[in-house]
View 1 (cartoon, rainbow over the protein chains, first blue to last red):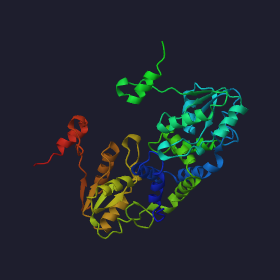
View 2 (view 1 turned 90 degrees about the horizontal axis):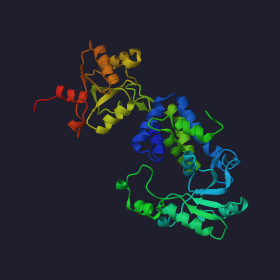
View 3 (view 1 turned 60 degrees about the vertical axis):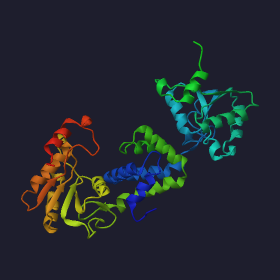
View 4 (view 1 turned 45 degrees about the vertical axis):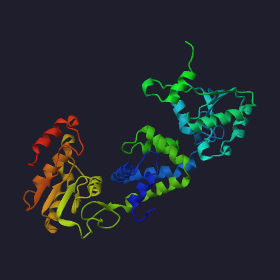
Length: 198
Length: 198
């Protein structure tokens, strides 16, 4: 850290945030400087306490400030269906969509076949245990539709094959409102493969 | 603050940054959570110390961690010409362009005629004192080309009228690489008004 230049230090730290380049980081740092010091201190305090106050839900891995998250402790959620996601923001996106009423399982990891990431970062044992303990009937694999997400879905599906549980994968195709003209080859191929009778 | 929900609290604080909506703030908060706690603590520390470690240059108002900024203490800069800017990021942009070799004066304010902002927020006395003390020959008004920036430039120019100093305003016109087709009416008008003989 350039501790002799406090502004440059803050810009460098902010520049590590995703989607924040040096220019935006500079703009943000100047904004913090131009605001009252109380704002900088509030943000500082919130960041300092974050890792201590937010932990992973003991059941599903979602972020929570209690032992188990709001979804796991909500008796109205359907415990027979488990949606497997790679990261918490994916869970948040599915919750925002608002149709899914089951519970989740957050892997906090993806297989990276191209980077040689080994499968031991994915805790299959914990997932299998949950399926048995909570009498889960269906596991919906909602990892991303990327190379890593597909590899992870395939790996999880194969690892759970011996369990008496239905394993499904979310659909891939043209997004809502999407133009065929601008769809890539793979998406178009998947849209045809996954076609449904009307 | 929702101190019962540390993540929501951080999202709300990050969402006050310029150009950061709730969605981006959420993404940033999750990024900080997924990183090592050391990053959150470094960012927290940097923010906490910012207002204590960064102050305004006693001469020009630029941000500095010393008494006077690098530009004011640089003997190679031309002290006879003073560029008046509204905010430090404007100074940074001019420095980045790299042609200007004079010194600066940062107002840290703009007149807001539409919001009824009174002129007392602009410290004309300090600027006039500097012009006299440092034997300044030209003041270049580089406030924005907005309603506020123009009003401020006009106000500063009128207030300094009694001093033996040349007062200029940066040019307004079509930006470099700009298409006339997409230029607004005011810019086109200014480009014609400010035309130069070839």
